[in-house]
Length: 490
Image 1 (cartoon, helix red, strand yellow):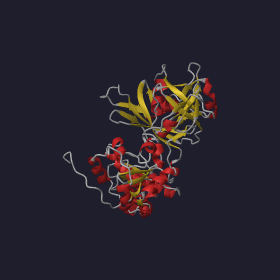
Image 2 (cartoon, rainbow, N blue to C red; image 1 turned 90 degrees about the horizontal axis):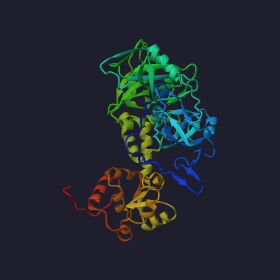
Image 3 (tube, one colour; image 1 turned 45 degrees about the vertical axis):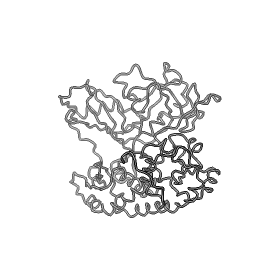
Image 4 (cartoon, rainbow, N blue to C red; image 1 turned 60 degrees about the horizontal axis):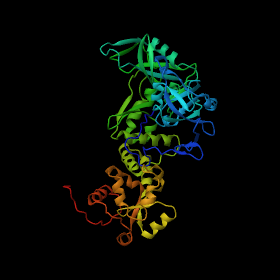
């Protein structure tokens, strides 16, 4: 029930640039740098038979009826993957919330290819004529219920309000999605025909627990599950001004019990999270709301709502921390900037346990900051370390090299054992990159060594760059940097 969202903005320790794959001509196989799986160039199969890399081709015979089709068509050479499991998911699509499909052999599909409908390509985030990696999986969760959201196709007359009986819509859904063993995933879309009219259907929610189980299940998140004989399908309209689902009682789940267990928390920037009140008992400032939710009467039709003076992305991480605490798991290793934001949120929410956690992390970071002799830095790099120096700052970037968008070779080859401020200016012109430096900062080159021993390549970094860099790196040890001249009217 916790409404986790994708992190916004740059993530310090991850890159949006995928690692480069390579083709090894000598071995005759394709190697994915993402998961180190080796694929045969002809069949696309991996050595273990559980993975397959196939080129996506469109289904030329696609129609409305096939848009909700579960199976993707493949050549018989990948039958070992089909034998491993009845479904497969895209390694790329799974990371982005993609869907599962079944693989079915068709004689007219070329070797090394997979034939997908428009809806399948959308759900799997697949591009036409592009290679895609799939893995055989066995989804064991069974769907208690599935909620589908309907809207009229864009080419329908906008001025007319359409009325559809809920039982008719549910029968159409059962016919399209009710195949026993089919795996349905939240956010999947397809086209559905009801009484001769076409609708865009989106899977809005998938649940594997009953209402009572879900209301008390801290840490419950269900994004996909397998349809079985007892799965209930619900339907709703995405725009009731154009489409009315008549006689629709909706989803008869968690009516009274969930209202007492769930708080609707709205963040400073206007997004609302449905949160188990048990998670929020650690937040002193929300004690009143937690108690009000528990005291709701049986006839109450509203949730308890509360606002917090915390941004959405920060509150999302607060919930992740509180859930890990409740489940006795290790919280994520957030970077220093995120930890500082969490510390402010802990103060706002009155969450002592999060405040203590952040204080410990920030203290550990501060304790390792010191001055370094130049000989110490050179010796550390010679032994396999990667301590980078920028304007006298010492940055330990070794653990980040595999995620570096420019590759993991350029920094060790070009920027070690010298002051790399000029290199940083050349490749990182955005001020946003300055914000990442604190995560890797471990101290400063000693003043004497910096003046006498640290090589500084020509040309020197611009004065404007150094001025901006120092403005953004206020976390540095106290020093007396050389004065810089302000220019360009700034």
